[in-house]
Image (cartoon, rainbow, N blue to C red; front, side):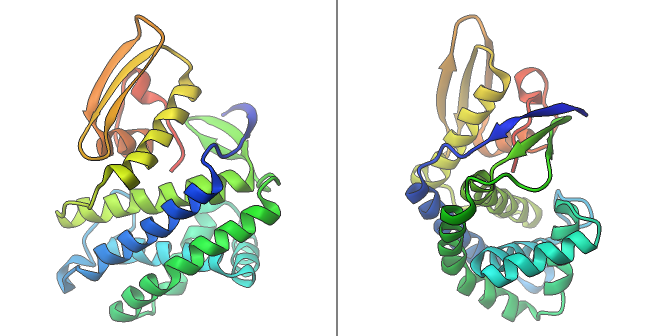
Length: 247
């Protein structure tokens, strides 16, 4: 990996970030509530995770940010297990694995509003502080503020996992310009800032739109969800689509 890049902070207004978080938790809970018994064991784009494990991770992460005690406990346990995001997410999957599916579904519906409020509280108190570990993005290490994680990345993470579950179960995710379009536009803004080159971009679907910067740049056109999948590392992109963005 190349040396550390500069710190990254959120661009989204916090009120909007909280609104997006609450809506996304609700949409994820609604999606899994409609799954049939045979769909929970289906594989996803995340290696080693089936739909059941992915839902467990989303629930564990939401519980972590809904409660200061859970925030401290989970991060301490992950540190004892070796540290890093992989240790944390593995812990979350393990800790929810015992829940019967109906309890898992009910817990996801219950925790969403509390998680969105908890993220607002945490961001107000510690949002300006850096994460204790540098994060790897596209072969580079960079520092994030806790506010960037809480206001931006955790909502993108839930959104992408909703897309993962929908893709794994053959369902169409609910997509609207007012919610998904705002999330995608924020991804585009960061993607453009990260690569810093001229471009013309057209994303299709309810979450899509058109963007451009400079002259004579690369033309990119694809589905909005697929664009985000590629930038997350779930697909392979050439040219400007090789620029990764955290999810």
